[in-house]
Amino acid sequence: MSTQELAPLPRLAPSRRGVIWAASACAVMSGAAIAPAIPAIEAALGASQASVWGRVALVLPAFVIMCAGPWIGRRTAQVDQRMGFVIALCAMAAMGVAGGFAQNFGWLLATRIGLGLATAATLCFATAAIAALFEGETRGHVISRQAAINTFGGVGFVLVGGLLAQLGWQVPFLLYLLTLPVAFFAAGLDWRAPASPQLDATTRPPMQAIRLPLVTVGLAMTAFYLVPVQAPFVPVLVETPALSGLVIACATLVSGLVSLRIGALLQTVSGPVAQAAAIIAVVLGLLEFGLAASVPALLLAAALIGAGFGALLPMTVRQIMTHSTPATANAIAGLIASALYAGQVAASALALILSYGNPRLPFYATALGLGLAAFLWTNRANLRPWAQWLRENAA
Image (cartoon, rainbow, N blue to C red; front, side):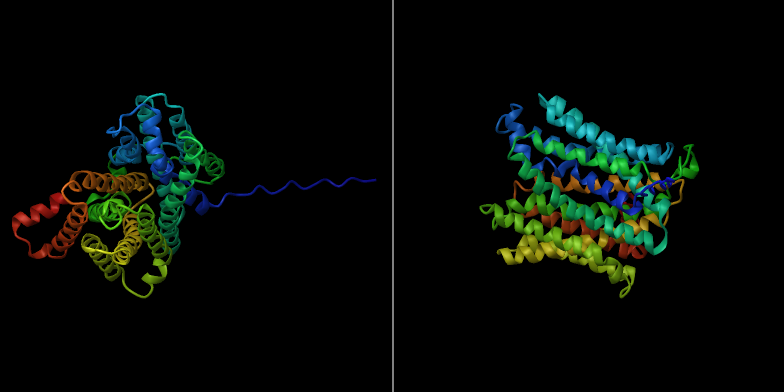
């Protein structure tokens, strides 16, 4: 009997979009995965009731990304993009899980610094991949879906982290292992390497063109992140944690839905009009948060902030990426990551510093800052010399 040679099974090529989206979602885990376990971590590692070390550990990766993002962005352009992507994802898993073995806060903080560096590199590779592998409307689609998936992923990781924290404070750290399957599929990407072997003038991003959009990203993230960090302390919600969760979920859900539909929105209105409307929505939402005296009013405020942020983020990132080239994509990605996490750090700082006087004060201060920035930019042609200086140096 003759035997027929079996044809080899075709190798499944990983989806470029899927890998980028999954890697970006994993980056959200830097803080979300362990946020519900912070009180248990402080108790297990011997912190006093007044200790802030657990909260420092929570925000430390964001601070590292804010500071190191631009530097890491330029360095990631010098290495093999595919292998660098894989190594960064594996480092996220290693540093994340290592935190679960901490015996003291020194150990935990060291792993969180490592996690921040690995997360910054992952974000740089993922964002640079969008610029390298996609163009035109396809790139816009990938960016808008990325924003939506990150938003929904943050909620999902917090919920799962909270469930796992019931089993022990170390268990949520296992969530960081989810980056390993993403690394496996990233290893199969067909991606040019390296993007730019040398650091020179050609690898420097065009700061004049992208400075304002980067500031917009940071301010928008500050406004959006104020909702989860400060809403539970608003008088209407302070005694009912479930209602705080409802308000936070409202902002997150609306943000993700708007990001998903931003492409269709931009087909009916122009980009500048949509951007202006989004900024107005965020400012009104912040003011409403400060003035609201009922849960329905707070839900409306959260929806306005979520809608504005959900539109601003993909539109502004798309605007920034139009100025990228293969040589500058990684550096620009680092700047975007730095701006996003600077917003998170700023929101946490505002909530910590200003809320002692009035828990609503951080919302007023952010609304004032965002409104002033928009006013100065809109009227930049008519500004006096001192105001011109303020606008240029603030950006």
